[in-house]
Image (tube, rainbow, N blue to C red; front, side):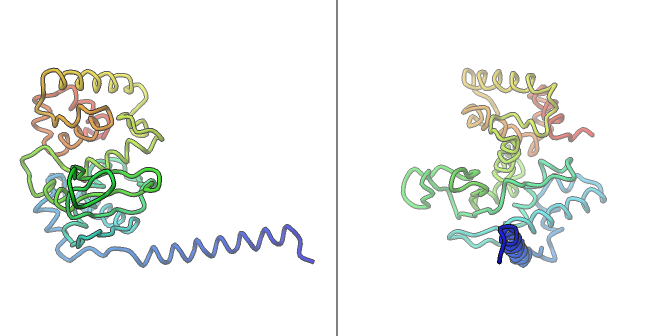
Length: 257
């Protein structure tokens, strides 16, 4: 006679087998980087160029590992090698100082050809969204547009990088709350100072404008993502124009170590 305990063990075995098969299936989806991926990183990723040889090697390994753990799917868009590498670079840049970092809250990245609306429509009017981190039925999914993804790395003079923006949202979300305060990486003793600095800057932006992208004045969540783009795209300029923000972002992303 089969006991409850035997049934339990059979069910556990079935679950283990399913997970094992799923893991094999995911492993087969590993993206192999093209032979010239180092050249692409050198040509387009300023953060990578500024690393020493050991740093570049670690960056390459981190990009390859990240791309082996997440599915990238084109939705009416062809995902080319350039796009794949840019996504990988955007993922690693903000967490490069955290060697054991894993985006456990991301399973798939959808690549759209261009902007979309709140209903994820790629046609029609009111298409103003260039990237987003999903919630609800889209939990653990990121959407990014191919055009903006490329512009973030090809245009080296602006303050924008959509990939970095969206991955910073994921970092912010890792502590359970998207509020512009990445408590998972920010030392607790600096939380109040960072919150106050964000709120003060947002108010100043609303009253007087700023060289910071005004989308950052929407709320602290968007401010953190926008100012992080600025920090990684033009750290020299941010240090001159907003030294207090620059110093705090150095603490948050630990780039001064």
